Amino acid sequence: MRRAFLIVTGVLLGVFALQFVFAAVGAFTRPGGDGAYALHSITGMAVIPALCLLTILCAVLARAPGRVVGLTVLPLGLVILQALIATLANAFTDASGASTTVSLIVGGLHAVNGIIVVHVVVGVMREARKLTAAVLEPA
Image 1 (cartoon, rainbow, N blue to C red):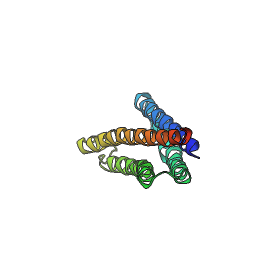
Image 2: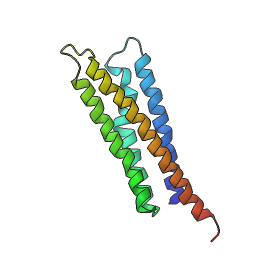
Image 3: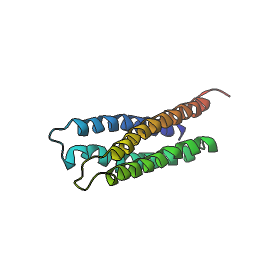
Image 4: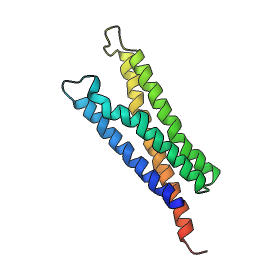
């Protein structure tokens, strides 16, 4: 199960990398419409949360230490925060839906939080590797 924890964490990290690509696709799509960020939205609202839950389950089943399980839960919380930040950024647009200074600042926090969550997942990956290596080493 520890190997599964490592593999699922690697998949989660890979999907986060794709998420940045999908955000860039949305940003550079011309003309940009509601569908420009469809891949980014679907991945962020469905795929990543499901993978976060699967990663948590694998950590628990791998009997990871409580600190590691807690670290594994953190990305899910940060993903929920991502959705809240995006909603808040949209709430600060003007009546016509155009960006305001406040909406752009809050939207920038969405990107910063995305970077933070990737760093946390890298930490989870490091812990999953240690856990897997501990099983493979002779006693």
